[in-house]
Each structure stands twice: as C-alpha cells, then as structure tokens.
Length: 351
Image 1 (cartoon, rainbow, N blue to C red):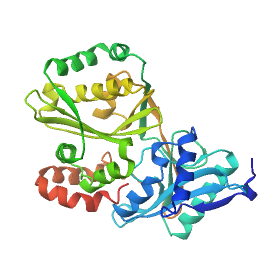
Image 2 (image 1 turned 60 degrees about the vertical axis):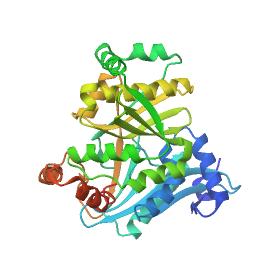
Image 3 (image 1 turned 180 degrees about the vertical axis):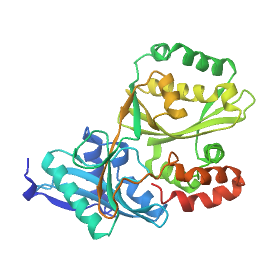
C-alpha cells in the first residue's frame, strides 16, 4: 500500500492502448467500480457531446493503479458550469484501493474544478463519502439478485406484476436482439417527446454500441403481427445487467409490452448466468419509481455530493423543477422531427 504523498495523479490518454488496458483491468476487478467508470466513456463524451474530459487515475511508485475518477467539464449558459463525475451516468465518484488514493483523486478534482472556473464539482456516489459536503438525495437506485432458475425469478415477481408479464406472453409478444439502434431510437424518441423532455441524439446510442460492443445491447419487443412496441438499451458489467435507456409505443401499455420486455431481459440474463438486475435510477414519487417497486425491487438512496464554488445551493436541472414546467408543456406540443433536431443541442448540457 502507498501513502498519498507517494501517489501520482495522472490523466488517461485514450490514444494510448496500454493505458486504456490498465484502466479497464482495474475497473473490471475493483468492487466499487461500475460500468460508468469504464474508459470508453471518455471517447463518447468527447466525440458525441464535445465536452472536455479528465479521467484521473492514482498510480503507485511501482506503476500499479490505485484508483480512478472519471470527470467531464460541462459548461452551459442554460444549466451552469460544472465538473461532474460523470455526466450521463447514474453512478460515479472515485473507485480506489485505499482511502489515501480516493482522497488524492478527489483533491485533484477539486483543484481542477477551481482551475476551470466551474460553479461546482459533483460526484455521484452510491454511498455517502463526505458528510460536510452538500448532498442531493433526489434519486434512488433499484438492484436485485437474479435467481439461478428462470421459474424462481418469475415467482419472485409480486402477483399483480406477474399477471402483467403473463398478459404480455398471452398477447403473443416476441423479443428480439437488434444489431443497431434504429427501432430503439424511434420508440425512445417518441416516448421522451410524449413526456416533454429532449432526446439524446441517435449517434450517441450508436456510439455506445460501437464502443462497448457486446456489453451494450438492444432488446426490442414486437406485437404478434411484428410491430415494434417497446425497446431497451442495456449495459452488461461483470455479472450485472443494467437496462439504461428505454422507449415505447403508446400501444405498449395495453398489450403489457413494457412488462414483457423487462421479464425477457431478466430471463435472458438468468440464462447467461448473471447475478444482478440493476433497474437503474428513478426519482421518488414518479411513475418509474412505482413501476420498479411493483416488481419487488427496494430503493437504495444515491448520494450526489457537491463542492460549491460560485453558487450557494445545489443545482436542480431536472424535470421535477417547477421552473421547467412551461418548457415541458411546450416541448410536448413541438413536432417530433423538430424536437429530435433541437433536443441534442439541449440535452448535451444536462448531463
């Protein structure tokens, strides 16, 4: 083990395959690391969203990586100037072998945030690290073990929700693994438009598939007649599956396509021998929160911690903020084609 004085804080260079390989090996082996600590996010955030990235790692004198902390700088006139670990991710913060390494990485993040002139630094922890930092407890995550047998997973779903899954099966729905994001994006873009929020660009989703390969997968559910109804883009990390982006047709609810979709994803994960179903982040009191509770998942609070430099309170850049109510209503009335064109210019700054 090395003390903080002996550690070097370096930046990942994605053009150096040896550095990337060492970073990836550390992330895959470290229990605190998540899919969002993977090196591929650096290229995606830079090339798709045009944000500067600072993927920090702590290195011991013998060259061993002791910790990683991926960061990106999002500077927006609309939503503020922030250094975040990590935008577009539900989990983040330092993943480190020692407290000394985590502290050294966070100290460098704070130095960078000040040097860049940001309003604040945000680290998205699964567990509370700094009781003296302002924290936003707006979000929870839902994670549950996948049982070894398919039938046991079905029986573990509460009765009313299990009936919805069986309804989807009786309706003759089918699931398909798609080679690209075409059908997914159509359903996703329509879905977020109905909810009054801007869509990520299609090229972002294709970049996820291109960058992460078999660890990023699209599953689409179709009606008995072959009409796409519901789709989900999922990440795979170690023994976990993380359904992360989803979309559906308006007909999906009546046919129980969303219920069937997540059951199919769980069933396939079970067949692959995976151990954890990560249902992802939701805000308390929302429809997605209730939906996940109906599946028998219990919420676990997420702790997004802040260092404030040029502001006095934590930013509230989310649809729950009352000041965005008019914008959401206007967005719903906007033609879908215009919304899909304009959306990427807005959502790139939300993170």
